[in-house]
Amino acid sequence: MVDLSVQLKALRLKNPVMTASGTFGYGEEYLDFMDLSRIGGIIVKGTTIRSREGNDYPRMAETASGMLNAVGLQNKGVDYFVKNIYPRICDFDTNVLVNVSGSTVEDYVQAAEIIQELDKIPGIELNVSCPNVKAGGMAFGVSAKALCQVVKEVRAVYKKHLMLKLSPNVTDITELAKTAEDQGADSLSLINTLLGMSIDAEKQRPKLSTITGGLSGPCVKPVALRMVWQTYKAVKIPVVGMGGISNTADAIEFMLAGASAIQVGTANFIDPAVSVTIAEGIEDYCQRHGLKSAQELTGALKID
Amino acid sequence: MSSIANKQVLDFILYEKEEWPNSALMKFKTTESLPEILPGQFVQVKVEDSPQTYLRRPLSVNYIDRENSCLWLLVQKVGPGTRKLAALALNSKVNMILPLGNFFSLPEPKKESGLQNIVLIGGGIGTAPLLLLGKSLHELGYLPHFLLGGRSAADILQVEQFRVYGKVFITTQDGTLGEQGLVTEHSILKEMQPDRIYCCGPKPMMQAVASLAKKRNCWCEVSLENLMACGFGACLCCVEKTDKGHVCTCTEGPVFNINQLLW
Ligand SMILES: Cc1cc2nc3c(=O)[nH]c(=O)nc-3n(C[C@H](O)[C@H](O)[C@H](O)COP(=O)(O)OP(=O)(O)OC[C@H]3O[C@@H](n4cnc5c(N)ncnc54)[C@H](O)[C@@H]3O)c2cc1C
Ligand SMILES: Cc1cc2nc3c(=O)[nH]c(=O)nc-3n(C[C@H](O)[C@H](O)[C@H](O)COP(=O)(O)O)c2cc1C
Ligand code: FES
Image 1: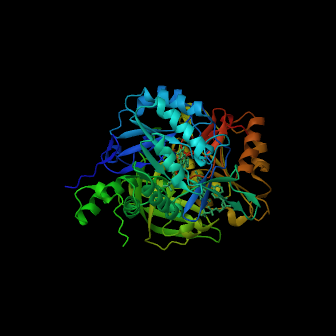
Image 2: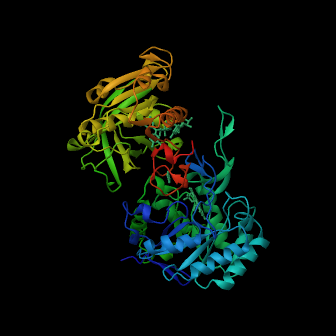
Image 3: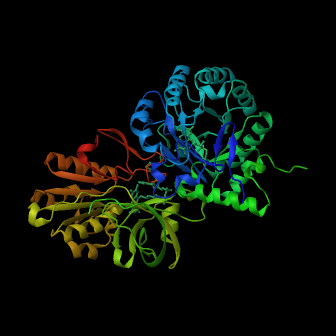
């Protein structure tokens, strides 16, 4: 028997597979396809203090082995989440984390305080890296000074698991990773989408209403893997890797590069049960390689 | 007949294909039992082994035969995904997620509703979901009018199949088949007052039909074809602005009553 469970500080996942925010709705969208209790956790849609209509259509453009999105954090706000969505999803037999975003430090702090009251939500993922909103969002994730402030103030009020999601749209991701660690983040997740752009040559127009958007899918995997590796070497807190993971081998690669757990994002759209397939695949991999525990994979990359 | 079946991921085999220069009618079979599929619902088809078509392609269900687990798709070749699908060899395996989306609202059986003139307007490949809708209306005792429009005769497909369920009227912009002009200009719309209009086609055409329906105070549903990533409500990419704000066309649509839309 392989022990698939992994520990992110005090947060225990039954296996290393989670699903990425914005690609998994509130989990309910996937109930026809899979058993949520078979994965380690889900991160629900980006939630903000007030409701947001998101960006105008078109919000999506397909690219080679991936896609650009410009959803812009459409959601009904944290109060709506608490009243209407939480009661429907609180009994899911897996860890449900809420992805929190904001335009000001106060937005983040207030949302975190409200979500802290929800018994069945063991943690939040702070999204300081959304490339699709004008104010805030990514602004907090690309400057160490702004990041320092937001993590510090949320940490001061939020006692449960605090995962910080890093932006890849920076020169040196380790600088931000270390800042977040110093301010008390419990874990780091990466990467969010890469800022990109797509043009319709015939129409001579951008394909997205926002002109630029966030790139995800298999095309970002090498960049994501490199950043997970760099971050793993720079910090002591657990790293949660994502970016283009579509199958078991991808997930294993991220763990070898230093991830304690992984998130599956865009791949859920193509194969809605792929997260379960990956969880099963990791078990099989461990058996084949004689590992007793999935945790042994973290950072096990051989480089001599 | 109005609850939506659970969504499934199913493999199909292509058993028959009819191909035209710009489109193909693809008939699939599955060894599993086919869930109930209502007119207007769609499937998300996987196009294998092509980095250019990473995402699935949404296609309307053209026709189903549940007893024999058969499902038809009518595909217009517009880009790499639809071209690759249309070029598939017989006996190829194709993976689909289904059934997706809402469906056209069906009236009470004709005996009870008293509705006379039901018009189904399709533009180009937008005729695809109207065949299954016509079949359902026929089963409810109606003889729907199918008004099919295209640029030229080559765009008008499945006329014989439509005739099984109702009367067919045609417009082409170049006049190679039926009346010359746009669907909204067809004489049948001048001669009668439709009780209901169902419409699917390019957006400018649906907007023209919607404004005609509004002018004549006629109930009208349209089926939108917004760009989609997931097709089942998880990504929020497919939104349309409605009287309730941004809603997903893959779960609350693709079918909308024109009163819900801000056109
Ligand atoms: C609910 C729904 C039902 C549909 N039903 C059918 C159907 O029954 N038969 C059929 O042939 N097509 C249908 N479509 C459209 C079909 O999904 C697209 O044509 C297809 O995804 C294009 O893929 P591609 O790789 O061939 O082309 P791409 O390279 O993706 O696109 C080629 C060109 O087509 C345009 N295009 C792509 N997707 C759409 C779209 N959804 N609507 C309008 N233009 C688009 C692109 O902007 C581009 O100019 C439907 C779409 C939706 C959302
Ligand atoms: C449609 C879409 C919406 C997203 N929304 C969010 C979001 O609300 N918050 C967030 O932190 N990340 C969001 N992301 C980013 C993903 O969680 C993930 O970081 C990214 O897509 C990379 O992983 P992938 O390549 O496996 O998709 C979104 C991604 C997509 C494709
Ligand atoms: S296509 Fe993903 S929500 Fe509609």
